[in-house]
Length: 505
Image 1 (cartoon, rainbow, N blue to C red):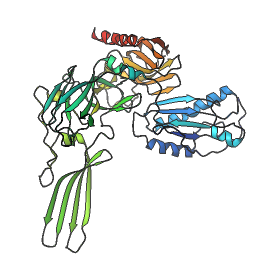
Image 2 (cartoon, one colour; image 1 turned 120 degrees about the vertical axis):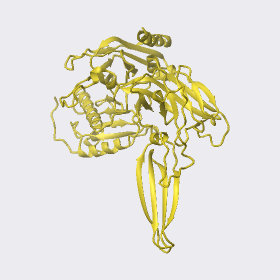
Image 3 (tube, rainbow, N blue to C red; image 1 turned 135 degrees about the vertical axis):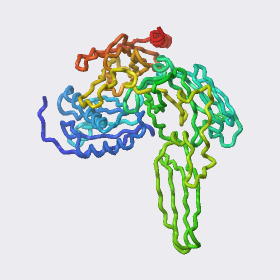
Image 4 (cartoon, rainbow, N blue to C red; image 1 turned 180 degrees about the vertical axis):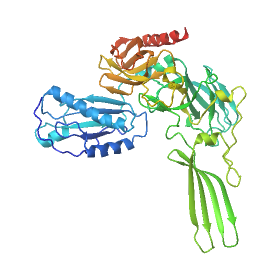
């Protein structure tokens, strides 16, 4: 153990490194021989997390030290520094996937010849928009199927694998064009679909879902991408719905190597412009005038009903303006007719379309944006062990564990943890070098793990079968170690096909 010298108080500062436009780094600095965050560090991290808007964005934390002490000690110190940053972010509701690496003294910014230089090496670098070098999804992604429709007619599409989609007339932004709209649709129902396309059933807060299927929809007019019109929705019936399945719509937040789900539409997909609903002029006498304007406004992706009242007591006086804003949602507007105070209604706000009888309303989900849509139910509504019989019991109710999977090789594979009894694929929440952490894995569940890595040299795969999470939350966990081995693309497809076959038997 090294001698601990007088610690120097060091304010945290940040600097942007030369990265790509999408990938920027921030530096958090530490005092000598310390991995304790300072007050200034807290302010910097708070500022950083306020800018993390995309829950699918991944972060890489890299810990460093100066050259004092021995190599092993510095390695451990750099790891503890990254863990301190990761813990602070997690404790302050940053649920993005975080990768941790630690270099000790091996990657200095300078020669460590004096205290000023050493100060710059006591750091953790936070890399935004991190993407590992795995090209797995590029090789195995499922192709879409194209359907061409007349955008001015109500249309029902029966997709290749049984999904039905009702497209109301006027749903798309065609900008006056009379060209057909091409819908490129990809369906994901099998566990092999989820594994090969790197899909999971984890929400943006790492809660688990049971999937009834996923669909990806893209729309094109004349070869150019198009979007849904204001207050329009596609109505989708997934093929395996049943009475009381508790399924609802979850939208996909796509990152470089992970997709997470939320009942809210992704930022930027709510395209609704400001819409004038009504404008009323009221005169009580020759002098007094009031103008009431009702609008729908999209402010940073949130929709508000805005009522503006302008009032004056005399023609020579200025108007006094009063504004009331009420947050609403596009879902509410799609499923209802919004009336103004004087009962008028904007031409842009159309009555809810009549869904065909072949698509029962109770089995149909309204999709408010294009892209990935998942038909899911929270896992606690499906698995009995996730249900608490006595809601008044305040004792902690432990229903899940965190599992660690160690990869023996240096690659950073895509790893899926698949539950055997339900359609749930768990994404890892964080990675410390070659150890992958899966949070919220239900107790008493059987599972298997599939890992795939691909680069210019070829494909590698690792697999763990017939594993169990103990029912006892205090029981020791089995060590899970994956050995990645070279294979062919066909080997991977056969391995995941076996998972489908096992479920169908």
